[in-house]
Image (cartoon, rainbow, N blue to C red; front, top):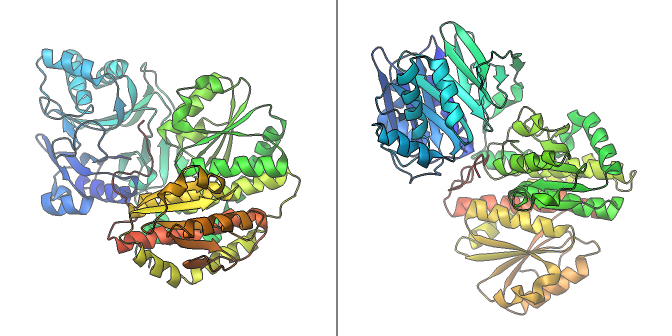
Length: 586
């Protein structure tokens, strides 16, 4: 969600900024803008729409100068309008800023600044940063002191980059990601390494509560009190440079298709961390597991597997709910946090609450340099490579792959996690997508889809419903099979489609009975199973595999169905409306 880019160097800034924003489009946004420092003033252009569309209309990449900032916005405060897009200039136009996060006390700050004669044009909370910086600079005429004074007044979570009329860039990080890229001919500031990976793989990851100043002298990093801070330069993994679609029409399809490999690779580079995490889990008195969206669904699978196969009780918690019941976390317990990006605000808040209770934090995360990784005692990397599509696909099965590997260790090998067999089974589903494409055409005008599953298949039903909602905008709902008669059966009629997750395991007969009850009410049945049945109007066949491993296989056809349903409805599966890859605001 929202992308920041800044550049200070020898080359023309605007084309570099636009290209960086383009590489970060996956984060989700509704408007885009760029500001550069020209010879005499700050030049700024911004508008509503995609990077390419706004650039074609306004020629963002033609702005003059070798210093600049850029931003893609996902609206929180104020409507999606040109004036609310970033960058935001100060009242005098001598400072411009781009900002991610939420300024919680912006109303109070805005009222004070307006009383002092500083004008505001937008409805955003972000604009207050520009005018507060301007006010402080007008008072002290020192950029470093202006930054310190400004940050002392801001409440909330934020990362911002400010460009001053004299050409200096200054940026601060507080609970939002901000990275410095160090190139041969310039410096970069970005919320994501993808913003500058084409130019350099040398980076400095700012810690929470630090700010940086860039000018001809170089880089100076300080804490919020103004004390100098030293950082080591980190080499960014080159895998991030490979975030291209190749021959695929969309990143989403590419990432679905990568799963035969990513499931095998899941956690391979974190074998020691998996061993350490397993030991902690075995000896913990209380275990909690948290995530948001897809990651929470993975947490539900973990709960089922660990309780059934290892007799270990786990309490899953939706990350956004923990702040309302922080007393849930017992002292000296373990919190396992799952997140693809490692930057989700709800997950980080849950971690903060758990750490206050002296809980040990274990994380399963794809970005090993993320905020979540830095907050964790043990970090297990998914190792599935960059996931650009907003809707999680390969990261979900990578999370499950790690959960299965932990399960096998917890129960001393009681389940056989045969990675090669799993990979081959996923490959079989991907090898023939004809039936799935045909069903997607039939679903084009459907309003309601229900997905039914029992036991460990219920979390997969929830994940399936999430994928259909995210990609095709069809109302979808996951239902536990045993609850059908306790309400959902009233919704079944001839206008409804129901997906039945029904592999031939111990849940098969009960789930098939539920399917017949639904069919008797006129609804159409799509069966996901390795065994055919006359009750299915459509049968999507999956390979037979060990009972415990079906969740890794049965989600694949529904990912594909969601993707092709999006294509049929002419929606963009990579960038669903109103959604962002990393939800960094609450």
